[in-house]
Length: 533
Image 1: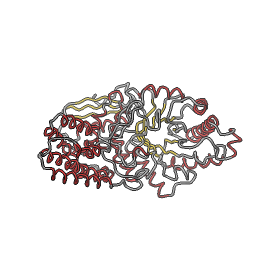
Image 2: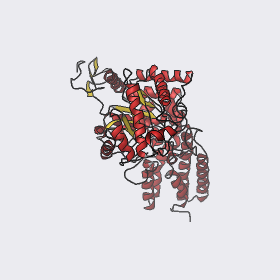
Image 3: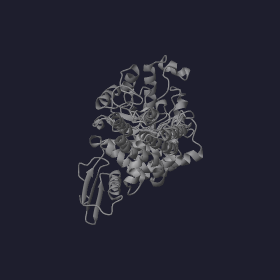
Image 4: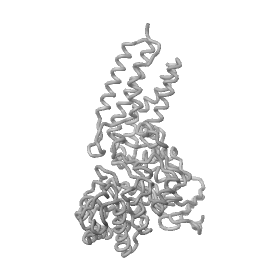
């Protein structure tokens, strides 16, 4: 490489070479040079030396990152600062500020941010710039906006202008989760007719075009406007989509969540149809690992980022993931999203999942910390599967071990079955303490505290159940009964632990490997075996 960049290297690409004591970094642009440094950091972390190496690399998707777009308690300022640094580490270049429960983002969209909140936003913008992340400010006026009132557009420009003055150069006007069966003012009925899909599309296109042409085009250094349409989760042709397709400035980035709000998969064919119906490449808002809805109640979503088809970069303008209320815990899935968006054709979900565990563990992590993390991740494995099948159950790895146990047990190999399963029980029983002591990312430990508390209890209940089965095989039915009772008590204690108030919607009991471990513990006392005669 010799510090020279290949002439055909795309934007954000880089070249890195190391030989002997010399290291050369070069980028197609400043972002590329920054990413070269990140790759070098990854190579040397935990290593005393590295062999000679040459890397030429570039991202396949132009926009890669996160949209803070969930319901429930928004992230704290400290969490956002930490997240922006994390995005730089994993080569994400986009953060969209759109927390549903920030009143100044949605309900009070006309009102300026208080001075202290504005100062925090300015600090976030500077943090983003420092880590080569595009800070995109989103303003969501659709619940109360009067499209045809000039004063409304003036208020919108003033709100966006205050953020431009802070250094924001990327903006979004989301129009999701609103009704287009009514107008917010009589003037819109006069301007666009009776409420309808077509009329809503026309009004929204006119608004978005004005923001692009009158606000963004009039200011230096701005990126194209982004939006989330009211119909964001399908590829069905409608009068609404046709109105936007025909009327909307082609520069505006249209966000799309896939074939559903939380799609079981996203394929190249899906994205191709979406590009046709919207008349442009779509910008995917991926609702994973967000946990603000009923099916995710009481759960963290720590499965590998998966079920997104290689080759999507050909049909997408970008990919952002919508995370959990638990910011640091979201890093597991976000790590996968970053890797997929950088190079979806070479993406390996399992390898990236394990690398995410090592990243959370910190410099020079060993299996003593990574293995308990992966076991914990497995108990929080709610993730979409392909087709119309139900979502994958929690704890697929544990479920497979329990299935092997049952096969061996039923075949008369009870002792061998117990011995093979005991390490799994011991790992779950001790994982919480190991994670608390060994994981460098203390935000992750804080975010997962209720689940770690519950995991310790479920793990101990698991061990006691295996002890009870062993006692039964030994003919000690009295001891087996006592240990089954202790297991039941521990499981009941675990079931009473609840999520942190405000962090999930709705708040509820913490779930750990539900449908898998609890089912096994309930069924275990009824397992047959050699009993005392």
